[in-house]
Image 1 (cartoon, helix red, strand yellow):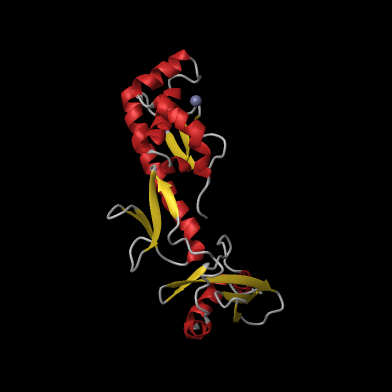
Image 2: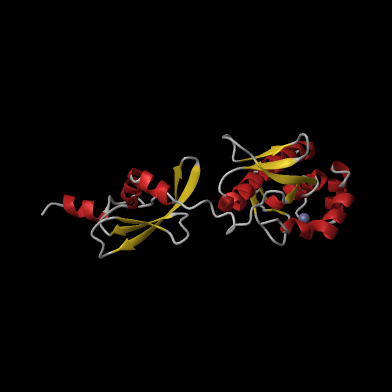
Length: 252
Ligand SMILES: [Zn+2]
């Protein structure tokens, strides 16, 4: 017996068998979930209980991507059975507010194509979003993380030039206890939530961590360095002490 039939049975080795999690049908993101079933003889497709997504039952020997392709070929069947989007299940964020760089933005639904999440400054500050309400929290968070990283990179680069040091890497994460940290190998790490605070605050935290590349302590020399380069140090520390916790509250 050659090896070929076995390979076909178990999928090609080394390749993760992952089926796409969504199928786009007429601009709508339809969730796709997969159930492996050893006894299934063929791919079985059904709608989920709410009529919002597709559930595929997949025999052991069939790859998930093949099951997905099958579902794609049945788009018309799916489209006929899809229930209106479950606005009642996921509260719409439309009209909620979120503070970005210290400025209150209203979350508004945007029409058409283009970026799923973007900031509009005029006539009033708004965070424009589109797509399935179910996925908006993740999309908004991803967007804000990218914005945070860009702001922090800009600030950290400018302070490192001013202080005559350099850092190796800058990472952005969701930390609950510290706004920033600096490791001995020159990695700066920050909470992405700083992008929600007034810009001066993010700027100060960048100055603080870059100063640690020179002074790995909180002694008088360290504070002298931070104050010299960042005149809004006291204001920002005070803000973080009094209002820092508010950065952990989002409308979703
Ligand atoms: Zn420190």
